[in-house]
Image 1 (cartoon, rainbow, N blue to C red):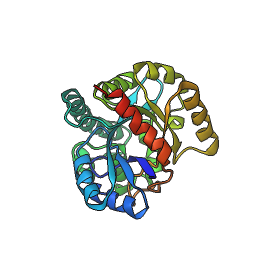
Image 2 (cartoon, rainbow, N blue to C red):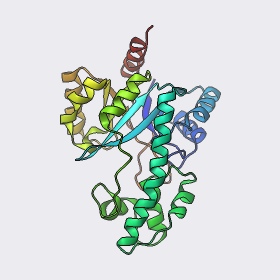
Image 3 (tube, rainbow, N blue to C red):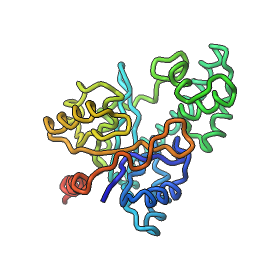
Image 4 (cartoon, rainbow, N blue to C red):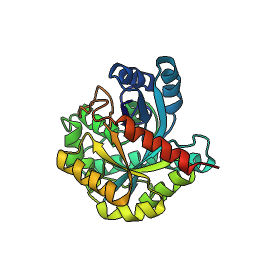
Length: 276
């Protein structure tokens, strides 16, 4: 039962529709995927419908992009309650914050002589909950950079000249929200944040797991986080961070994938935490 628990669709910054992602996952031999769009859950139900059609388990998820003063911390939420009022209210705040952030990023780009129309960014995204990858695509289209990676490295990456912080959802509050609404909170691609010292604080807030197996982790990083998972008694997850077939970064769906045993442990923990 190989599972990829970190997958994006075109409801956030992916290039494929939920149905297309499910079809691709089926072709890859996966039996389960988690839809983890950034700060939005609208892609989950279309994925579920396609999943029912082709025999694919869809884990309802979300990826919260949070910040502290030093870095971004990405928190993945699994088995979330899509009808929870508190979760829906927070997502509305986050989506509004994402829209406002695009205008601010474009203002900063204007200040460094790289004029960019925010409406073009929204048009590229196909929705108002746009993200920095859509800004990067607009920068490429305008001829300012050649690749998404260059856009992030030179202009819109963390602490870059056109970087604008997110609506302030803290890592701890993201974990608490996921836990409170019946989901499992997982520290996403922890080596990217390189901020292991926050793990005990997140555990106190309800953290359930850590994404040790990740497409961007090398073997040493994977082993490091497997050891931390053992030390702190955390569940281990795996995810490709797939964003689609038309992206600069060629993350392959299902690479890495989570074993049957570890996926079952995740589901068992969800049931345990939500027993009446």
